Image (cartoon, rainbow, N blue to C red; front, side):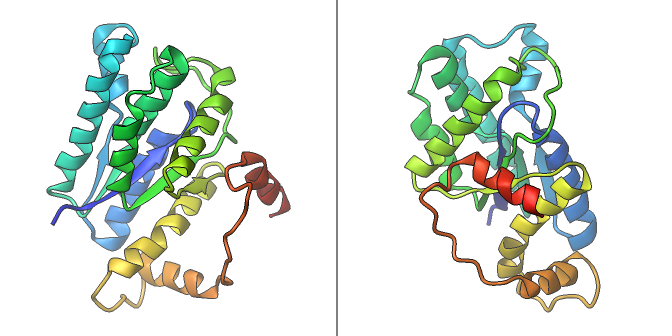
Length: 224
């Protein structure tokens, strides 16, 4: 049985790669699960080509990213997908007015057990050819939300910096892992700690007409 796919998506310079690697290390060490990190293929492509992709090259990049994630899932319990074909589709839409990749991008997310959306609360940092600038982050974030919501797909926002951001991601992943764990929980370790924290949380009713509005999340963070 293939491992679980956890999608990590978001605008540029929002810590996706750092989060994916941190989750892979933390979950591997604390749970004993075979956790794999699927790096972003676009970064490698740009480094090798010395440029960003042309419109007609986007589909192959999206397909290769999906193949990389699904190949790792054949030998891992859990794969942290450091971006997905949906991000390629979103950039194709915004940069080239090409909507043709959206359906396949969303189809990949339907195969994912969880989607983590990295918030815009980190400063923009230049890094390689694929970074366009801070001004594109809000439109990309909005396009990702719009696509997922239009397809009826949920996501968990990951905000904060450093350890706080990692803990936010672990909070989102915990229910998924606990639901799939059949053996008794150990007396110590990540599972038992997260189980206790999960049990202490109040029951949430999540129904908001504006659940795709990032300002709501920013207000929540300020009130913490």
